[in-house]
Length: 522
Image (spheres, rainbow, N blue to C red):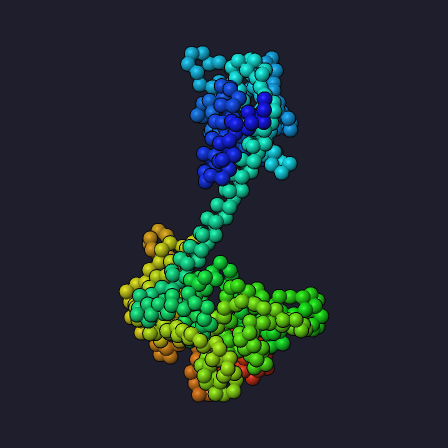
């Protein structure tokens, strides 16, 4: 038989390799061609999955075969086929049971298979599965063309390998698309609100996201500046890359440059290995510089150079590296005032504020507060494994008239605390929904400040204010209260400048930042 004659039956198989087919359809077409080329009463393609062979396609076998699993150890014929790299044919009088006995649907008596053979399929030298042929005629395979069978087996291996690769790629694409959809859904869901100020904010985000302009996100503490930065990145053409986040306020002053620009081995004490900085990690993507107003003046000069030229130098190196990074910065400070006070470079400010976006405080968002309450209740109920929760009508005026100095972050903390308190009053046999009352909210309009961030209540200073309430507090609670009052007073005097406050209190900036987080002051 000529090569042309050998290859002719398999033209469709080769053509299928470039077609977009489902794995099921691809396997079935392969098996149909196999059975047409090598006449038999039944054929099957089975894939090895652990210790069992799973049918992926059958032709000539009962439909129920597709629902079975053939344990290799329980079927010596299949085990023999799988372990051999050559086609395996079993003698008619072999005592080994045939796994397909009774599975060839025929009218009349239930006939047994008399001639059986199979071939193992190997992918990258590992067993993938088997193809089996069965016939009722004991001599059906006496004249089988072994050269043609060898060609077919190689094509079958190529087909299943291509199907596996295509399926993995499709699953990867679907997974990435799902992640993208979830990220976008999270952004949209988290930016809850129907007020005009939020509609305007979303419009600004959509407008600037399509460009590569540097964005300066401004707004009070807790309004959601990071959320805005993520929305800008997710709607940009750079969304396939990661959003690299840097909290400038949490960086130790002596390591700011290393974190941003990287360093070479031995650049300073402790630099045991070379390290890429955030700008390198964000190459081709977006770098979010949160609390940009905390960057030291010395580092501001180098940051300006990077933004102007797109070139960085690792600490301890003279070599220039070129990066393509979009910068989105955020601050809760008035950088124009910082420029006037000499604490921030004017040229860097103008470079950062190419497209400023102002995030409105919660008090300017009207009834969005109630929508956010619903979002936080749903999120926390699900996270805590609790039934649905609701606000009683008495809560609405309290929530709507409170000033929310901590904005959305403060509201989220408030709802989390209220849900925990309401859970303690919840009785499964009495209620189907957890109800949150004004007592659970625990917010006061007397000083109109978050209970997690109390302000000084006396001209005598924070110590006197803490001592005045000492009978209601444990020692630890009293110390925490004193620290909150003292630090809040210092932050207010320093216009929210955390770095300056840390220096006045004689604390390392990173330790100070962790203390603020523990005391819920940031």
